[in-house]
Length: 435
Image (cartoon, rainbow, N blue to C red; front, side, top):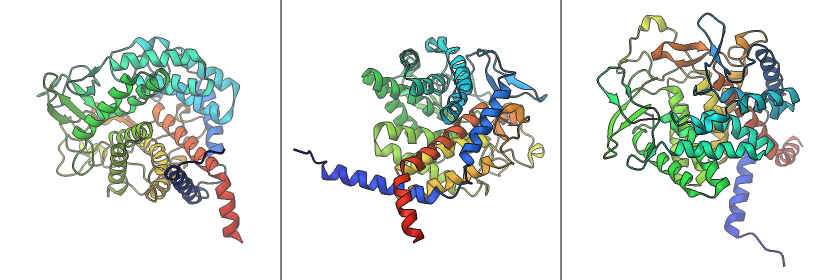
């Protein structure tokens, strides 16, 4: 006898299909014809040229030096070390180019010893963007083993008293008055995906418990009443009490660092996708709504590096000369992260999702334009221009960044997937509309 799907589940799936249909109809004709194909062809050409300079997989590309030359990280322990491998895996996924795959494998496997690294929280970036994509696309068990051990190493930084994973080791705040003995940064939400993966493939719920606990604690202490985010929260390890809510890479302690907000949107969208807990969905939506409705978001939806830069009521604690930045630097990396996150968030957000999808497409259109996408032979062979790494540190201002490319390519793949998954519905609806 045929088993019938429970009515509630059937209605949920029908609702989800309807949302996908609406999203596809909304975004289907908005990007220029073959834009994604052209973007990946461009990525293939750019990275092929970059690989002529970046031949050592133990020192992958990161950005451009002040003198205009290509900056390679000094070793694999740089927090960005996994992104170039991820760029190559995404490019291979779209183009199926065997040479790009070979290089992706080389730049991934050079990171093997990171599985034992416990020096900071960024193992999710370093391993999941490289080995995670390698395993997803090849199903090679050796990649899975590296990811599991990497998750163990990341989990070792969890403190049950604070309910968080320690991001950095001890450091001093910008004003020199505060020592952060246990700093947790909003960026850390991105590394939880590695822990969720480890629970799924091992069956050990410890990783999932740590990830959920960290997300709940961050939700409580990193998000302001207006749904903007603090960058750094410092904890008392004896009591779990919040000692400080400050910034390291933003304009001021009470400002909203654009990329920090982007990490939050992406991180909570991913956490909802992994757990189905509506608290995380609602948090992702609130963070996204703050970002998208902010009067300081430029028309092209590529944000200033901080939403409150140069505004009264916000006092930077680092040495800042506003006259140097009458044109406030943008951060295309933040836009790429948000675009990727919104395409995922759109699928879970009902009618609101249509607005998220429209915003994501607008961001991709901007990033694909000549203003933000580089021509061949320029930009040290990175795709995106006009990113900001850390303005307070005087570092990586108005330059390409390897992780901006990563999330831009991811967003393009998510866009393609959304269209592909809805294509039968699109065809029917389009033909009916055109009659």
